[in-house]
Image (cartoon, rainbow, N blue to C red):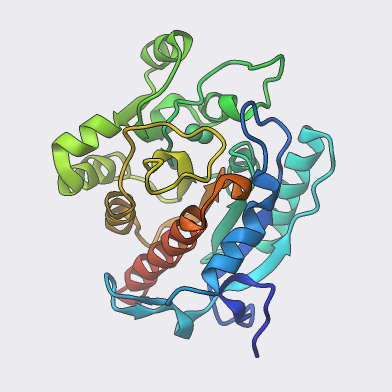
Length: 289
Ligand code: MN
Ligand code: MN
């Protein structure tokens, strides 16, 4: 049955697919261009207009399907919103599932990670997001990775694709030991070497979580984000890396910071495609067990 509102336009029965989709349209702390509240619906709409067969993985995601839970209810207060997303995730996710969270601003990743308690997190982002606070708030989206470091430990976080930060953030990264791979490193090493470095970081992980701030992509590929930053990854570099590092221990992935008012449609389609390819790579991993 075609269900126009959900991811892929087709609602797979809950017990038939490990891929559960949850929208988290929090848009409270944008500092430059707000609009991420419209992200989940734009990704769903884009998903209904692309092919679900993955050439890369040889998996037809139309056969596997997604179970879309809809959007988490978002109260105005950021702390309450994060708690709502966390509780929704906790009550929905079951062992073997992969949570697919559609943002919303980057802050929402904290709620999913709090609920799923991964032991290693890979964050794709143009920015370090390591500020202790921004505009008087510790819950600003510019502080997301700092909060993750405090909650999971710096040794369990790896940032990929970074190229923009303030001095406070670099100093904190050095002093706390947060590891990062810049977009220049990715360009220099190439996809294959980058995958190896990330695989090495994930070597002993039993629960992996991947957070994708869409501004990791170059604005040429993804103009529809709140804080565009030049010198980013290409969509192909990003998806090749994601497909390379996705293993059966993936517990969740989020795609955040899509800002539809500034999009020409490309960013939303990239977001949907990223989800299809990550899930296809994961499906190959669990099918070859
Ligand atoms: Mn971010
Ligand atoms: Mn960012």
